[in-house]
Structure formats: C-alpha cells, structure tokens
Length: 602
Image 1 (tube, rainbow, N blue to C red):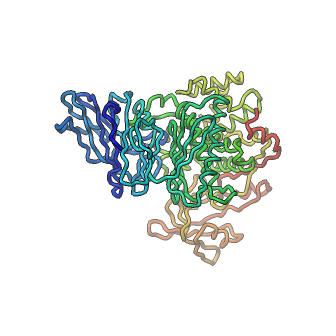
Image 2: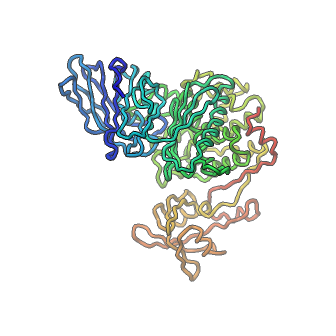
Image 3: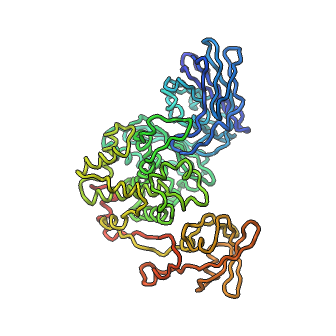
C-alpha cells in the first residue's frame, strides 16, 4: 500500500517492519519530529500486568541515530536508556533491530508463520513527550497471506490491516499489542460493542463458531455485571489467541487481551462435550476480560501512572488479581457455561492449593502482593514454603467477603465492585476506598475482617461461611504426594521439585533436586519409576528407606510413610505422625441456597 503522508504521522512516529522472518528480527524506525537538545529515550524494563523486571533492552541491537544526513552521537546511560546529542531543529531518526524469540504474551515473537509484539518490547519511550500523540506504522512482510490485528485506532490501513495506527499517548501505544499472521478471524457483538477474535495456530478440527458463541456469553455477562443496561467503557474489543502445542496464559490490555493455550484445548467440530481444557480456556478468557475493568481502569493508586524504568510496588494484587480470579469462573457459572457442581470443584481446587502451601503461615497475602517482583514471578524450590499466591488466597478472600456480605443480607460483593467503580471514577483506588464502600453499603466497618484475612496469616473462616450458604467443607483423603509433603516430576524416575515445610519428606531429609530411585522395605529393595510405586511396594508397611541420588551420590533416607486414613475417622489424628498439608472437599447440602449465591441472587 502507498506510504501514508507525513502529515498523518504524529510527532512521535514508529515504523515497524518484520524484516527478517527466519532470523526473528523486527526492524524499527523511530522519528521524533521535535527532539530536545539532549533527547533521552529508553525501553521499558517490564510490562504492566506481569510483575517482573524482564529487561526487554537485552533484545535491542544496532541502535543508530541521525538528523538529516548527520550521524547523532548516542550515549548509553544505563541498561535501557540512551541520550542523543541533537543539534538544530531537524527531526531525530533512530533505527534499531529487536530480536523476537519469546513466544509468550509478554514480549515479542517473529518467525515465518507468525508475528506478535507488545509496544514495551519494540517502542523506545521518548522522554518528555510521553503524553503527545503517537503513531505506529506496520508494513506488510513478504507473506501475502498475513493479516494484522490490534486494538489501536486505524488511520490508514489496507484490507489486511497493515498501515498506520494512532495512539493518544505512549501508555496507549504500548497497551495495544499487535498480532500478525495467517490467523482465523471471528466477530460478534456483546451488549452493542463489536468484538473480534483472532486465533493463530489452530488445528483443522477447531470449532470457531462455538468459541465465539461461548465468549459472547462471557462478555455479555461481564458487561452487565459492571453496568447493567449501561455502556461498556470501550467501543471495541479484540481477543488474540495463540494456540500452541503446550502452553497457557494471558495478559490484559485496555481494549484487548493476548492469550495462549494448548491447541488441543480449543473446541472441536462435532464434539458437544465441553472438555476440561476448554473449560479452563473459557476461565482464562473470563479472567482477562474482567481485568478490562478491574486493573486496567479500576487500578491500584500506585499504578495511576506507570514507571517503566523500575518495579511498581503495590499491596493490592490480592484484590486486583485475587478478586478477578474469584469472578472469572463465577461468571462462567452465571453465563451458563458451567454448572454449580463444576464451580464447586474449582473452589475446592483453589482451597486445597492454599491449604497445601505452608507459605500461607509465613506471608500475608498483602505482603505477597508487594513481593510479587521477587517471589511470585521468581519461583524456586522454596516458594511454597515462603510465600502464598495472591491469585489463589486473594480469590478466597473475595469468596469469604462475598459470603459474609450475603449472610448479613445488606449487600453482595457485586455491589461492592460496582460501588468502587463509581466511587473511584473507574480510576485509581486504595484499600481505604474498599473499606469506605463496604461501610457505606452495610452500615458497619469491615476493617477487622480485612485486617485478619489480608494482613495476617490467620486461616480464613471458609467452613462456617460456606455452611451458611448450603455448602459443607470436610476433610478428604490426601494423595501420597500431599501426605509426604513433596511436589514431584515423573519421567522414568521421581524428581523432587519441592519439599514442603514440616512434612514427612523434610523430616526424612529429602531435598529439592533429589532423584528418588527406589526404596527398601524390610529385606527387599525396589526400583520406582513413579510415585504410585511407593505405595505399591510398601504395602501395609510405614517404615521404609528411600534411596535417592543427590550430586552423584546415593543416599538412604529413613522415611515414615504417613498412612492414608479416611477423613473423620477416630484414627485420623493419631495417624498423622508428621505434619502434612490439608485436603478438603465441598458438597452442596442445600442446593437451593448454594444456587442463589452462585447465580448472583441478592
């Protein structure tokens, strides 16, 4: 297509070319119409929504600058920042390449079949001009079947979507990722808002119409949750899904989301059954779509303006990620995509994940939010012992708050969320705002509950609150890994990934990294290939010797095997020779009461 006229370009203008598909290289040209004498530019070190310093500048190479025909000296001042020594009023033009090797939702990817990028990976920030209009021009590669999709506003594009796009400022530019390739495209309207869904990498069996129909139900349910019959805060929305052999994840944006899933989890033509993998995908779609309100607009006060140069700390991820995790599957239930029993299974899984994390007794969920940069996103063998997930425990805080509000009959958590949206004008909020809205709706303070559930390591009152809504929580028989207190990988042997604090495995001397090769029971020795072999060869014996390999040495570890005792039996407490994680199950004993809660009835 013809090059857009210079007048259509903003004062900060980027040209992106998928220059070398096989080499995974994007070529970028940044033109600054009115540079400062000492113009600073930098590449972000993180992307909002993913709380880890990822050092995107490591992928930038061959950076050069010029004004007209004159080369401009660039002085690098730190790992991701450069200063251009400009002279006169001529535009400053910077050219560089970005290696795009990360096939995730967070950075950039380019090969012969697909291209994808977030602006935080490709677009240098022009200091002092972040609030000025920006334009992005993406040229079509030498791949005639490729198209382009993005949430940016189109100024002049061809039928395939390549061309010129506009952003009001830098934040908007980098909050609208770009998908390129020979992807599947579908469309639907939810509550009057046009939505597009693009899918890359799907198998021929993919049932696109079912994905559209189910996603439409999710979107309509979410919009009505927040606005009733009112309007959504965006005029269009784009889902970008990359289907791969094995993968899962998503990242929210202001009017789009980037998703990744296993291609076998997509719905298949001719199959009416909803697979577990597809249900999980729908939950991911619901989660990221809910973030359009809860974290992209209603957001921590600390995120009122992003600092792209360093970590942005907040203690509120338990609210923004945790409460979103509570509502993602709940909205599937309200949309009719899962039933009550399935939803209770999801809650059971979340409860057990928290109960089987000793770190919940070490770190509060508010602290876990603040430490996300160095703990949640940098997990190691000790993570479950030292921290708790603000996703899982945060969702249980939301559960407790919703059930407590409903029990007292003056409000629901739905009312609280909408009250925060109104109070904070769909913008920055603090924990004080949450407490204020709770008191306004109920006539009483919830400071004590928030202090106990969020700022202490006390156990949550799940059993009592669930019982008040027709759901019984009871102990369940733990699997062997949970009784031993280990997390493993099985591949012809048992690889110890984590040893939980206070567990039977820790008492025996197991360590992360051990390879559990076999065991001795009385006078016999056995080779094991999977964890189930332990119970098979041990039989009724609880005293055995585990043979492990560590650092090239064979070690023998005396192990007391905790017995699997039926829950509620008199011997249960005595059988617990070593501390072990708890396992529970949920049962709806009053289905009418449970359905009122799950259906969203007041």
